[in-house]
Amino acid sequence: MATAAAANCCFSLLPCKERTLFSTFGSTGGRCGVHTSLKPFRTAVVAHQKPTRSSKPEKESVSKKINNDPFAYKDEIKGSSAKTQSNAFKSFGTSKKEKKGFQYDAKEQQGDSGTLQEAAFLNAVVKVYCTHTAPDYSLPWQKQRQYTSTGSAFMIGDGKLLTNAHCVEHDTQVKVKRRGDDTKYVAKVLARGVECDIALLSVENKEFWEGAEPLQLGRMPRLQDSVTVVGYPLGGDTISVTKGVVSRIEVTSYAHGSSDLLGIQIDAAINPGNSGGPAFNDQGECIGVAFQVYRSEEVENIGYVIPTSVVSHFLTDYERNGKYTGFPSLGVLLQKLENPALRAYLKVQSNEGVLVRKVEPTADANRVIKEGDVIVSFDGVQVGSEGTVPFRTNERIAFRYLISQKFAGDVAEIGIIREGTLQKVQVALHPRVHLVPYHIEGGQPSYLIIAGLVFTPLSEPLINEECEDSIGVRSFISVFVIY
Image (tube, rainbow, N blue to C red; front, side):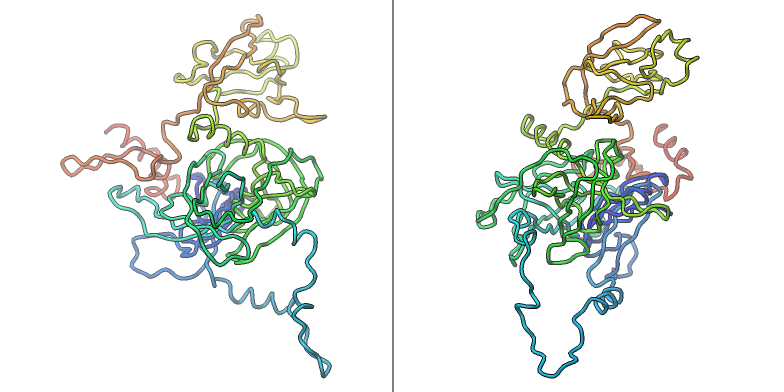
């Protein structure tokens, strides 16, 4: 069964079994779970077990909660795998003293620091300690048991840090610690982008920033470019470095936000606790943020990094609006147009365009786009019959990529073919509003009690708590809709 893990976090975000391919990782904590297949990496949970109403005390063990979703979070508790670690260390430990007069040389043990170890950009990576208190959606007047987790973050200047949103979800306290330091500093969450799984932190203590050299976001990497992932996986106190190459760049499902955005696939090892840590190229430039992996019996070494284009969009959005407003959506359901007979029926002369199957009634596109229209261009970029557009040299990417480059409120020019006639229409793009939200903004769900009946908004987390499996979900929703 495919499983996903979040870097150092054990939260499972996806509600469906099909989403179990992705997972996010956390270091130690009580609520992060394992994601199947694609896994966003959260912070490792310290008190790793999921809060329940059971009176049994929590044990220090790795929490591996697998949702039916392809995305899941994996957290690791300190001391949870003592036997495994001890056996591993035996293989790589110091050799026995075979000769008399052997003397321990501390300098030799430490070794000469290499260029990568001494690189200044490694010092910009910090460890994140978060205390979480998730709401109880079944009993909205109370909260679940508190737990802690650890993850990674890095400095971007102006007194701010960047990490994954799932690393600081439902936070009550966030602290960060620099490399080689033994002091933890309180951090504040300024913005949290659920869709893109990015969070912006700030540290007001000036001592934390003494001698700090923030990272600079680099260019989009190319296939086979070397990549180095840096962070604090598996709850370790020292920094960890893993290397690999870029194996694919495409629109990817984000486990935490249940969204589709551009992602970089790499083969470097990403483990619980790596979530929120940066990925570098050979020049020491930050090319993205590690956030999820794909775990399955059929595949190996598939990790994902949030590219700098998505990170820049998040930061620009925050600077423009003072908060995160989200990625826009066109609000239409599309179908590929590869069938020649279907193209002939729709009077589409060339092998291009995608068919509009449905338009959301609340979307701005509902004013100018109708079912049966064929979208052939977006801001002058031609859309292929497979729903792809040109991307760099000799590459194509999903049409959704162009929409994700826009900001809330931007206007796009859409080329459509309606009854054989080519038209140009203007559409304002806005973030999609889900009738059943995946996340509750503000943390605690609202509720109303009347005559012993409790009314609360329907949401994916509530469905997950009430219905462990998909069985009974339809009847559960029907009851809420009726009342």
